[in-house]
Length: 67
Image (cartoon, rainbow, N blue to C red; front, side):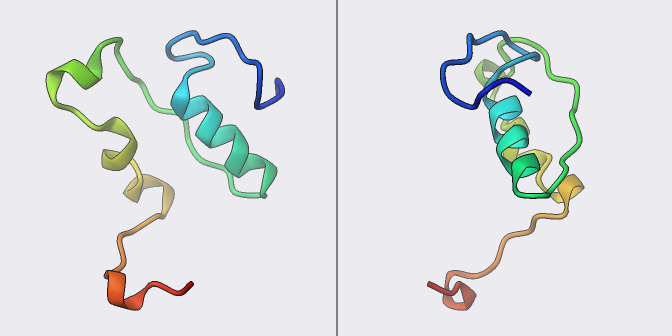
């Protein structure tokens, strides 16, 4: 795994989600990779939030959040 800082951006290889996934991996949480086409964000998609449920994350009400 490359260092988290100083990476060269390459969509689908070392992009924002890859950084997010690798950081969680270092904390012992493995997240799946998923197919993503270039420019998905220009089509109104939010692949990061849309795929969080697949990884086991879920929204909690702000009133339930702990500091």
